[in-house]
Image 1 (tube, chains in turn green, red):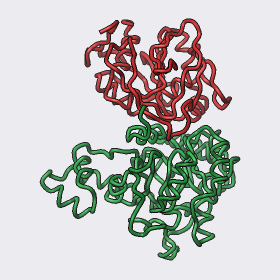
Image 2: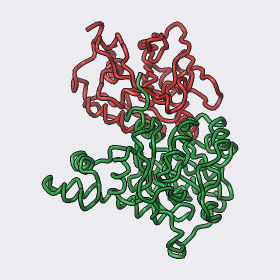
Image 3: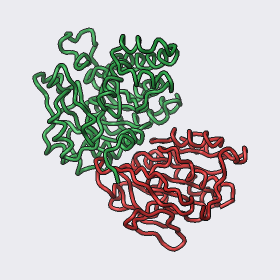
Length: 293
Length: 208
């Protein structure tokens, strides 16, 4: 029996596909998410909208909060560590967390280096803004990728930008002649082996979720139609007026993303969505997506 | 080869059409495996998409999530009805849980109750306990089968009429057959080995 293999790390993400991963801050939230059909939860002390509002340095959540959430549900539980904070990651692994999100939602602990994720048995998901960034994280051992979007804004525009950039990058690599790949890898700042692999297969070798700004069932279905394998919803559920109904609706819209009638039906009577932020109104130094590289 | 009657790739009747439940989980991987075997495979999200199918695969994923979506869109009752009329069904991991008649430890899922087994969810622990191992599956021949176990369940108890077709070294049941129902706790769809899928297609075709 061999644990912590690449296949079981990537494999768990494959089992999450077509599903919704929801941010939760209490065991009660976690139970609501699970009952609504979430395929996993992200255990946090505060959702991104509150982290954004509070400012300062947000860190790995209190293990008491994480353990209470792990106790409350039977679906996989994820938690966030700061970029480059390999000791927070070690602590999360020791807690038995199912997936670590090395996340730009928390201020980075290291501005030069991300966690060397191959050293861990627990799998990691990392954010990206384009294919090159995704491939750098894969090179470090991430077993799952997500768009960064702009967390805590309730505005899907950045997630769309990032998903389109990843998909465009894949299409470009697939159609680039073999003898130009090395120069392209240099220009991208991405590992050649992965550039070559995507050129050959036309696909990412791991699961790619959408994250950062989704707040409605239509947002979820939009990201799925753009090529996401599934969606993270952070503040969008528990910052809305009726989290239970909204959680169920987003789960249904993610499964039935190609069915406009179902999307229209589940979008009815959900109450107020979370308040949205115009990205252009956010001071540049308060944007989360540029954290990490 | 002992008792192996699975066929070579590409020899199935072109008329066979298999559905893969696409509520949530690794359904694309099953569709890819079936396509590799030159069998028509279609995703199923709504009851009307069950029409004209010769069998169904319930993939790995989160059983609570898949179970919920099956209830919400009235797939559970339709599938139960079809199986009672002899329809073949293959469940992997979450699919095994959903096929069971009873689930330990929780009441979070209403299983389909089609296979006379008791299943324990997350039987090995959390993700850090997920593992790969080689399995002996006599009905597939002597060559070991690559077992990929991800937050996997096990079969705790099987009543008469259920044949355990794969066990771990310690005797824990991890795959079973009951009439035209097949289920396993691991993920053949994440491997290159197509023998278990071919075994299911033989059940569908009436050769097993």
